[in-house]
Amino acid sequence: MAPKELLIVSLDVHKNTHYVHCECKNTGEYIAKDFSFPNSAPGFQRFFTEIQTRLKQNKISALAVVLEPTGPYWKPLAYAAVARDWPLYLVSTEQVYHQRIADDPGASKIDTLDPRTIAKLFRDGKAFPARLLQGVFLQMRRLHREYMDLTKKLAREKIQIRCLLSEVNPEFTSFFANPFGKIAMAVLNTAPTPQMIHALGIDKLTAIFKSHGNGIIGRRKALKLLTLMESSIAVPDKTTVPLLKRTVERVYVYQEQINNVADSLTLLAKPWIAKLTSIEGIDQRPAARFIAELGDISVFKSPKSLVSMAGIAPKAWASGTSVKKKTRISKKGNPYLRTIIYFMALSCIRKNTPLKAYYNHLLAKDKPKMVAIIAIARKLLHVIYHVLNNQPYMPEKIGSGSK
Image (cartoon, rainbow, N blue to C red; front, side, top):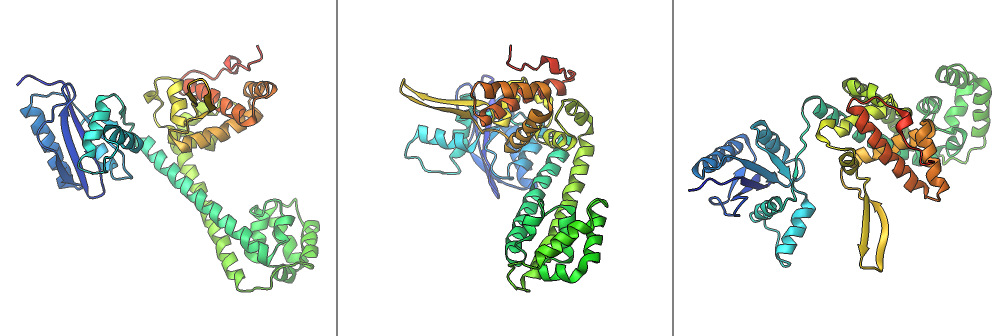
């Protein structure tokens, strides 16, 4: 049998069982029967042994493992394959669906047949190399996802506090510009209702203001709050007070956990933070979060690939000469990275002189604000790409569009 160039090993992964198909990339010839194996250590060993046997029997020296990343179930197998130096490629669920419909408009979703569709996508050049995070980058990614989860939980608790305050202390949120500031939270934790605040008295309330306001805010502000509480329209419902206090306690817990996770993330990202913070307008915490979602910059071959990963590359839609939709960003890629770079762009618009000038130039050309912000984010990603590749930040090289 003549040597074949490349063996495509395509898999459809699931929680309990993975399905495998093997074929030759050159000819499309199926290599032995499809098989399945359990999602376990013995199952993995069976998979690796079977593939090695097929490579040897068919005199194939190279292979490519291709799979559809489904939930978290694909990761153990993916890392195991990479550990054996097997090239790993991914296809999206959307690609598999459209390819299945293109092959047969009436096709059903069948797990045992999906690996063949995945193999076809690879043959057609539609699969992309997997980027599996390793070492410190994996640690940072997990810390950042924990950070995001905690911030979502904190946001829910803050919404709960606002809802409860609208009943038991409606005037509170109008008195404090930020009802979650140090002084406001201290008052809520001690006396959340108008009756309880009034019962504290001016001296105790003043002490709370001074101890949590760095001694700047004191008796005069406390007296204003006491006066406001005297004519409150609060609902006299004592049963809500324990719920409000427990919610305030959870806010304290989440805030502490968020700060601890952020500190750990910043420490791990320290080698890259110095480079990013050299860009005027980028602070330490956003820089650490950016690195956590970016991973290793060396896998990106150009700034355009970084823009694509962030999902802010322009996406046009046109059909013939009459149907043309407004150009939008693709929103494909990493949504966390897209959110971070958006807020970094807002910061740079305020603090970075050349980027602010470019933003104003776009507004002067009647560009919508959101379009201008995305343009700043895209330009900022180009700057970040070069800075992380050991090129010093040179603001004079950032075009303002005025020339």
